[in-house]
Length: 193
Image (cartoon, rainbow, N blue to C red; front, side, top):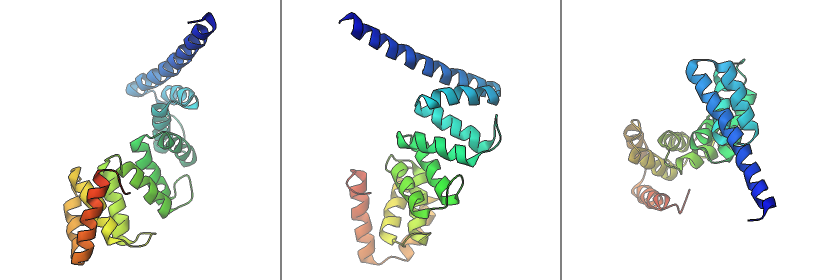
């Protein structure tokens, strides 16, 4: 390898090493209960794009630990982590849109984020998507999709899924139930969300 390439590689590893160190320092500070230091360390790493730092920073802003509670900043950093594929952040972003915290209330966008997290087998997101479809909560009611998502939540051991499935099935026709089971099978192999 040429000296220039080695220098570039060394600089990249050095930069990542500092980002990781900031994050680790933030974790250590949070474990000590020093949330002000944790906030600053997470912020440094989050600004450099570290997904876990973005997620933890969002939690601190949401809970008001180490800073004033700030839903706008919680939303900003939750969205950054969610965009990078952090499943819990995707779920939390859905909840922020659902409640209108740090952003305008948008049930359709909330559902989209719940479905994204649900596609990664996150049971609370699957359950929330099922509930929204079942109730028609800010979206068009869809018993087939409600049943499919509730079935996924049940498969992932969500404790409230059995009761929800029972309620959904009570409102379904035999044809809808058959369609829901086909959708559930397609969802399991990643064909339809």
